[in-house]
Length: 311
Image (cartoon, rainbow, N blue to C red; front, top):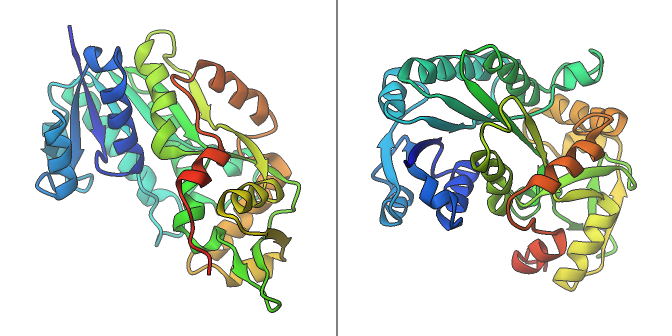
């Protein structure tokens, strides 16, 4: 019998990726009926989902009554929250996570798959406490683990898409006309990367294929670990440009940031000292990769398919 999977943020990056993956998977598409939850079910993106056979319903995380209605009748839930970029601590996002998962339980959801992140505060032993976008999801995961339902978690790496979409990660010409990517990270620091649009579903799909097996389990989702030096060489080769990497000071890095300067500076410090997924990150990523459903996109493939125009 087909089970209904409700997807919060159905027209967003992660939610859309999960829907796309399930629709294209020969087995999962038979096992699950998809219900996309979005603030505007009449948007062009929502209409595109309807055209593909997805049920699209209205739901707003700021209105839990609408979320309860959207959840009712579904058994499975994929849930991701957007960070509160104007917040100074984790409380606003954590409150949304708690309220929404409580609502899901009340509505009869039996299994939650939550897009979590590591706690930088916990990993650093309290040394770095300002990364509320990570800490909020980590505390949300702890809360979900107390709920009387089944649950599993995915924690995704840095998005390769950010290099195309976010100026912070992009190369710029220096005074001598050379293309240079400048960040706080040391050139050899290896950090995990994922093509989130293609591969969020690879890890969520593994859980959906064997939900009982992975009850209570966390998947650290990444294709692999790459230093910035390695990554800019890969993108440069794909784009036909000679791109170099330059480490800059935390103060110089902060000047490049439009918002949340201290958050990003601390996040990069923590990543270098403790690892994005913690000291066992390489092992946890290898474990998840072995169980991922479908093929994971390598940076070489991603940058060939997604070109940044450099002039």
